[in-house]
Length: 170
Image (cartoon, rainbow, N blue to C red):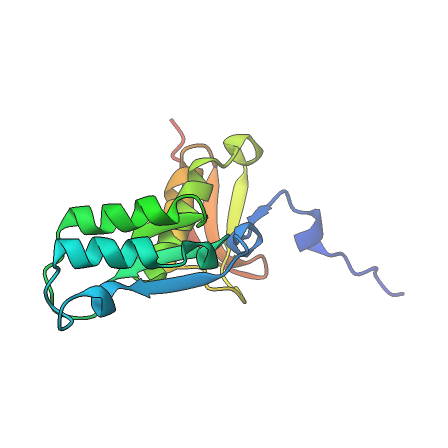
């Protein structure tokens, strides 16, 4: 007499949250302003503004842009702001920072808008494996956001998860 095999994972009331599904498609670039500085270190405002005016900003249409300066130059805040005004009509998002900081900023925007009602009083597994560059900070942001309403939170896969949070019973 053989017993029927039951998939307990499929029958569980676990809700899986996969950050990879939220990955915003689009090209990511680092925009290094070092080449627009005199000798790579000195920002001369008049020359800098002229370079910005002559640059083809349309080439960054629908891109996510991280602004950096790879030299040890001290860049005034207004310089990044000025570049952002040029990119604004074309780029999807502009930040000052590297690609990981850019990904974190993208996920922060997405996670802030998540509808938490699907997680209310549920056991949630935040899926751990990803084929896309999901930054570590996205997992932290998701955990703290979902913790507001979830009964429990785990990390990993349903077959091998690590418990992170369980709401106290009062």
